[in-house]
Length: 222
Image (cartoon, rainbow, N blue to C red; front, side, top):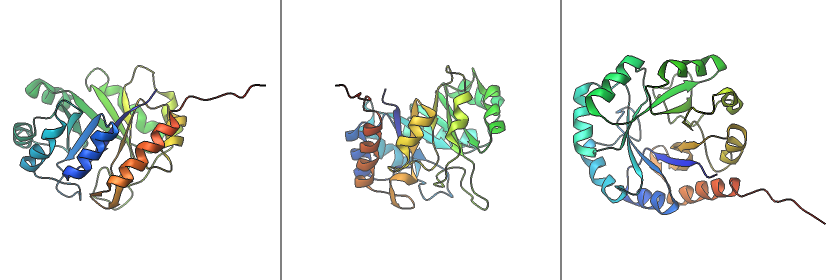
């Protein structure tokens, strides 16, 4: 079955148009100011309009204050919030209670112990995003173009709904899906020609690779 596909860190109408044309289920807008994918909330709101009702609009935030969320939600009107910082289960509950918007909780993964953190958020977050832990020295919690051992995900309870992120591109997404059986995937740097610069051609190549990976297996007979 074809996974949900989220293209994250969108900043141009051309990239959004191509992602929609190829069947992206989620479009992410990044509000972490240190990221090359950062976009002002008012601009994000205008960019997202053609996608409304066609794909889920996701606001990607890192340890946001309520004032941050007030502005972003008013201007973008997202379908989901992606909390990509160190937000505690209690903070996630508070955000959901205040804003009434489904939450994707991102968790950074390098070892099996990192995945155990998911237990505290089960029944609180609506979906998870498992991303690779940032390399040493990086100021970005995601979008670093690095991966983790996808086989770690095989221990997860099948009822846990998640997206796989971290260094996914046209060359490795098929292998990532084969190993993890992820119900959703997320890419940012994997479809960029330079940091923060989405390439419509690379978006095409990514979707082509996913479609090839999801083709039914054929068996040869006599």
